[in-house]
Length: 268
Image 1: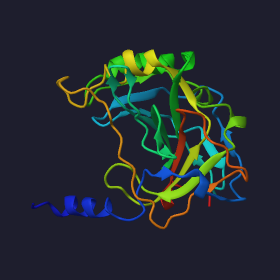
Image 2: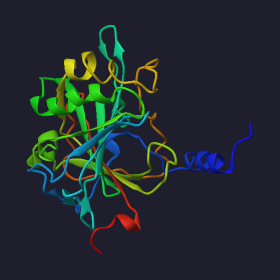
Image 3: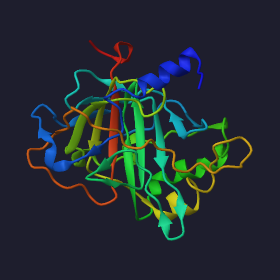
Image 4: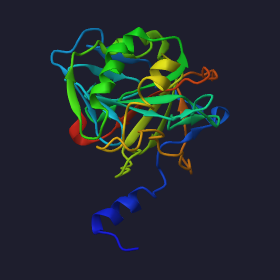
């Protein structure tokens, strides 16, 4: 099959040997002493400008004002938070099929949330549990961006309200990988936290993600299963921030994919 030069280049990049996501085998991870806690700046207040929520035909993306920052965590610099997006599964007869991209010991989880930090990515994953009132303003906005290409402005929220408490974000895995969408560029340092974001089944299943969003402009195909399958680990090492590896909570995943680009660095 013939392809354009740019398409062939994308296909070649996506077949390289350090691709994401992966399955993390917890009894094979290695402790790394410099994986210290993260620092969060500007996460406890509303951002100075409104957010933009958008259906880009692949996911729901929320663009931020970029005033919040993350540092620490074994990273050499601080990064601005500029975007977060979601991956999820599909409604099935007895519940919700898993929709996370990464898996731990072969188990995939209900959702995965990626937050891009100034071309560093920070994110959060979710499992089915009690209703999360802090997510309600965001979830209600999904009805406004049901079809591909639609976007709306929304009032900003404190970012710390959308992630677990800072003291619960000290145990995490770290590995080198790639973007999970074309061009699959291999310049990402991934951080997978153990602590979950909790959403109710009605928030994930019945009202929005799998029922109200569409891949297209004509509402013919529901946006479901918008994740990339796990890729081979090959010779990469997955590191862990705690000397005692603790099994993650069931159906929980929090991820911070960190893009390492020269132009993304805030401080040298």
